Amino acid sequence: MKEYIYTLEMETRDYECDIQGIVNNANYQHYLEVTRHKWIQSEGFSFGEWHDQGIDVVVREINLKYKQSLKGGEAFLSCLNVKRDGARFIFEQDIYRKSDLKLCIEARVETVSIVNGRLSRGDEVGSLLSKYV
Image 1: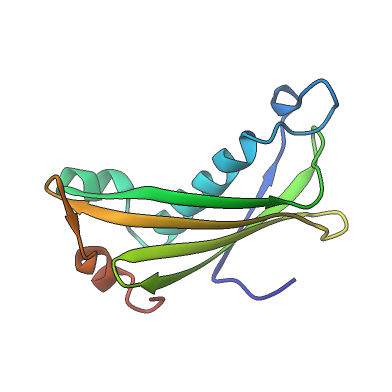
Image 2: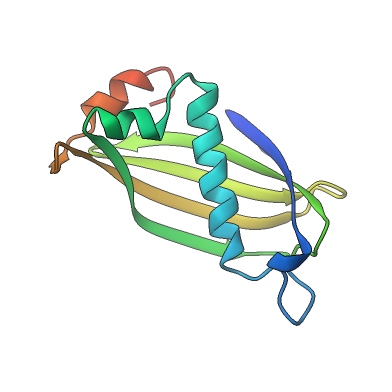
């Protein structure tokens, strides 16, 4: 496992599985989003508070690579790094099965900032996350 700025432990739920007994592919995006939100909260911020200030960080593009499947009731580690590329904040996120640390998902999530309804360079968010980007 590589190093990350944030790791969140979670567990799959049986109702997230498809007929094959593995977690349905769409649920991984939920796990990734929860991880981003929990990381922002751990830094003392909130997407809700930003929204109230007219700042919205929205997903522009997601690239997922499915490596291994998770099953119902399995614990996993959802890991996150972030970098900035111009106006974009790029979250590099990986999910590992906790029992054997097998890589299950590699994700690259690009976000942009909208401030008061207009696309922004993202400096409002960049200044808040300056120790990482």
